[in-house]
Image (tube, rainbow, N blue to C red; front, side, top):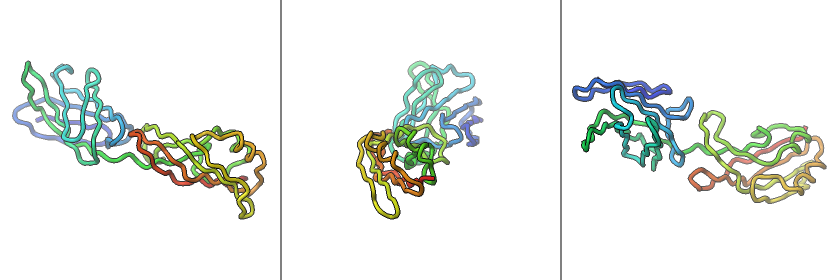
Length: 215
């Protein structure tokens, strides 16, 4: 009986011929049981009684590259319940030990952030203290993925009238924007829209607009 332990809340047992070896496998994302397309997914695998140099991982979806002893990098090609095969190498022979299925999903849609806020109210001073827009996975997704804002629009609305508009490349606030922020008044609405975000696989997508009301 081979017991495969997939850390972060996946537990199951499989029967493989007459072997009796304990296999432990984990994915690097905290509190997640998914691997993601377009991201580097670090796998850790140890097999009881077998030196790490003899342990091999392979998959039906994408590629797995051995980084060092017990550590692997998994790059799936598409979202699927993907088979991960654990094998051992003895001389020129490769012998399968066991397999399990890892849930592969697309990266979550990025969200844009200003001063740690996705919307709501902010003081004029706090907004002027920011350097620009950031982007991250949604709050409920506990993975470390780098998103970057490539461009955005900023508008200032006062008493339902547009008093400022600027289209910006990159994620930082320009001198012109800081000047406009200096003249903000209570109850003005600052709207960041058309926020284009670069994903780890070099594709781009729009994030939801951010609307901030000046306190």
